[in-house]
Length: 325
Image (tube, rainbow, N blue to C red; front, top):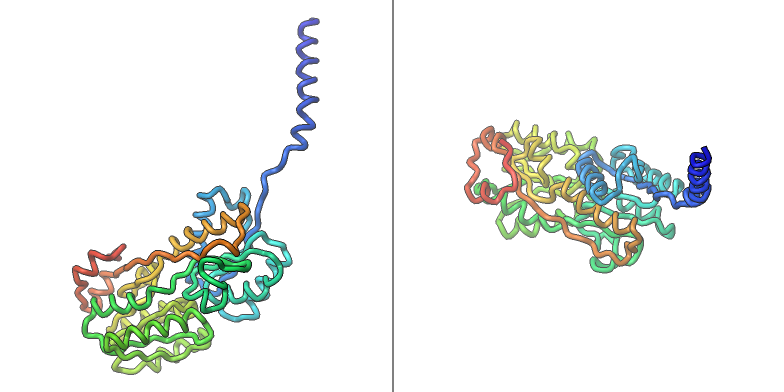
């Protein structure tokens, strides 16, 4: 009996000693990330970002909470109000998707110290988001994907050699679209291709822009423009009705029915961006984290090629990261 009592008292003593230590043990830190997006076309980027964050130990529902209210369109007031709600909630980081979301994040977070990671942005330096690509200099860094427009047009010309005139609507209020348009016009001039680039100020104008497309257009070129890409299905329908190809910038667009796409693979871009976000949450200063360049891939749609009577050349098939059949 005395032996049992001794064991009980010893166990009780151990518990009393360890209890204060347990009570004072530091709790695992949790984080809140606000996500601002103008377009549904950015959803794969967010998906890849979450997957990449989880691979780096930041798991949604465990130590990370995301505040995301879906795509808000390109209206600056709505995007800024969304970012302001993140600031008021004192989030640990903001993920800004596409140029409109990044413009809002830059404006609203100025002076707050809240870090912002942007993606995918065509020309973050030209847009004024960073002081330099190697040393962003403020509270923002991210992933750029602005160099693929010339190669996109070159691949289109390779696949459909007879193209002479293309239709490329764009939003003049989107700096990424402006940057892409400049590259497109420069490359088209070298390839002796005429480019028609009507302005589209909001998504409601897209049906009228499609209806106004000249009869002699040989292809539709969807640039890196979040508003245009959000309506890629409308351009695909117009292209199929006319019997002309449509090109865009990523695999989801090709899966939706464009003949081809050359540009970033959005899930991959999201995963790449998560690397920067993880570094920041672990204490890195975004001002010193260089802006990264995304990888570019060619995707082809064999079904669409068959529909349009186009033979995909071996050169393109060998270079493609994926062929939708």
